[in-house]
Image (cartoon, rainbow, N blue to C red; front, side):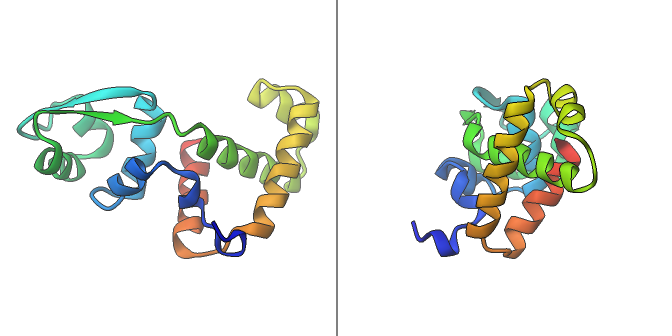
Length: 145
């Protein structure tokens, strides 16, 4: 992978990148956040009362049923991606004036982990391109985080 042209998508498993070609980034992140690491039973029809339809919306749920009806869809936990997005959130909050102590308490981590996350995010900023998808991921993740 060429580090000069790396994007946030490069931190996601191929199955999630494929899922993003079917449903929105917002819906994909909601699935990762709520179902990461487990299988989803995708029904034949997209009923508005289904828990997944309530989470991601009937439109995106219909797209899932069109492609994955009657299958078990694994949603990876995406730990590498979530770790990076959390590091970006921590760095942004530090830049907004929050102390390491405040962030450690907020995220349930140590002061040292806050410092390491900030360094990780700063290093990643230098490598990641600011393409449209990367910027959208950062915005959406901040909302869901």
